[in-house]
Image (cartoon, rainbow, N blue to C red; front, side, top):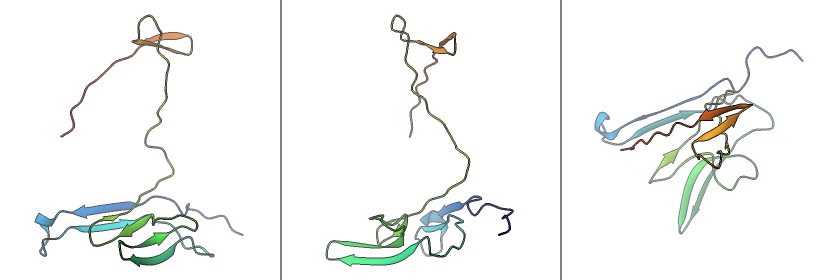
Length: 118
């Protein structure tokens, strides 16, 4: 089998246009996770309706909710890329100071920042 030149998970995109910018006054949402064709199929399309619940979307086998989905109230999707956006580490502080930690053999000062999200 020949080696593929591009990964089937090379990237993805998603965008939203707010209701004030559309002619119909509704939100427009588009999502393309760029997952390549496969057999057997990766995604299973389903429209589930019960008296208390409705959801249309694309499921992975064994997942009880769609990873890409919408109903009459909201829509959501996902994007993916092979690289990490961020790595988080829990570093223990030095008990005496609470503002220092060790990085390899060096003592480092922890810088704290407060940000208010609006």
